[in-house]
Length: 282
Image (cartoon, rainbow, N blue to C red; front, side):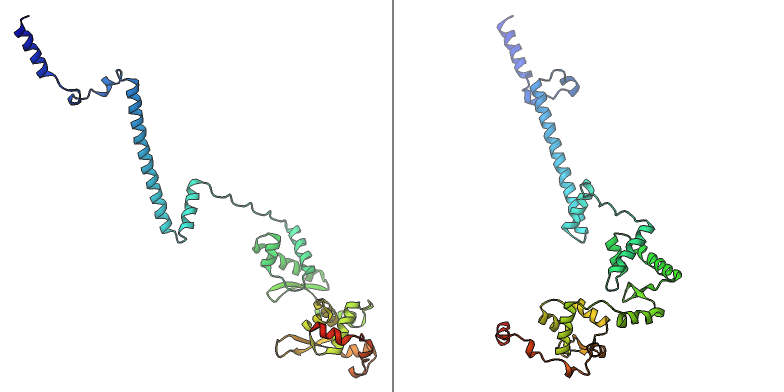
């Protein structure tokens, strides 16, 4: 080969040479077998980055959807939190319902409660205490009341003041009155004697005043004295509206007195330092 022929061939080769960055990419099928492992790792990383971007975009879209739900929910953030818990399934499990009592057990439970109440109790209160549906309480109480009437008991179950309570029947009122007023053989307690003395010497007097003098609550004792006919209500206090109490004619009869003027004076029963005690109490 002459120098000119070799120069022409080199020139032709130089003119036909194309830089790698300008060469067309080979088909994927043809390039895959000859791909270097490092190149495959780079491609995988790029694919993972693209997948991560897609995941982030999906998360942003989900957050935007949650935000839209929160705006539509009246409770705002709390409503959005509830929606998220419902979507994720992470909400607290619902509490187990209370066992439903059988009719026999429910009847016995209601009767036991009604025997100890001192005022009418509502159906809703009974349902809450027994953890039973309120719609079961009313019909069961009606059945109990009908059963007492059919059996001819001396007491019955009646609605009163928005609730239920056991009462003695009107046809036996004479016997009950005789027992309360004349037939009581149980001695009066010390607390009742002290309360009765306060009423006798301070009448008319309120419950709060009696409790302040005795230093203890005396509501139960007053109810006992009223039920035995020894004291009675006699109006209300003008300032507070509290009930006033006084002794009855039966009180004078039981003590053998003609009037309250016959009550013994208190002076002999007072301590010698009563004035000092009064000053200290002030």
